[in-house]
Length: 254
Ligand SMILES: [Zn+2]
Ligand SMILES: [Zn+2]
Image (tube, rainbow, N blue to C red; front, top):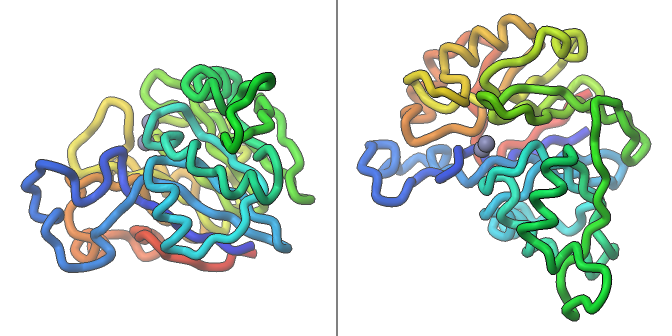
């Protein structure tokens, strides 16, 4: 299974508009972060997790030719705002299968009413085939997808586990019941927003503690804001099996 980090930034990306944090002026390409999204591929099957406003650029930057399905973690704009741009992929495969909690599918269908329209559709509009995800695993491309419930502050959202890989973004806490689903991970991807605490996101220290509790072989931090610092400096401060991700990072799992 091949993992490609398409974007690793928080909701406003780095550089952030109108911010004078030093990382915005970094010359290190690893400090340029688009909105968080990951591509997971196996046997010519490609699953995108989240589709934020940088989706089009990410497809170009990574030369992505095909997407078979999109898994949504939650309905915040930085995770959904690229939905209109899936059009060329729909021309190729027809309505895009999309998966998310009922609340998330409802928000998408309100915000992108024309995409969900069944009658009198605008010619050329993107099309989707929505599937509501509950707590039960489901099958996609011959693999079992395990939804993981996490809390984004007070908002319940989903992460996903496929084989020994799990992707948990916008996490603040994880219900005790979910830890059993996170055992024996080869790679955990989990959000680490910034240095200071935040009401709805793990900060760096909390993300390290959460990773130690889950105890994967390796972890990659993502959903990184302009207030975490420089990639190189922060990377050096991390425990041995924890890494900061960066846009374009790709590796095989399993
Ligand atoms: Zn987010
Ligand atoms: Zn969010």
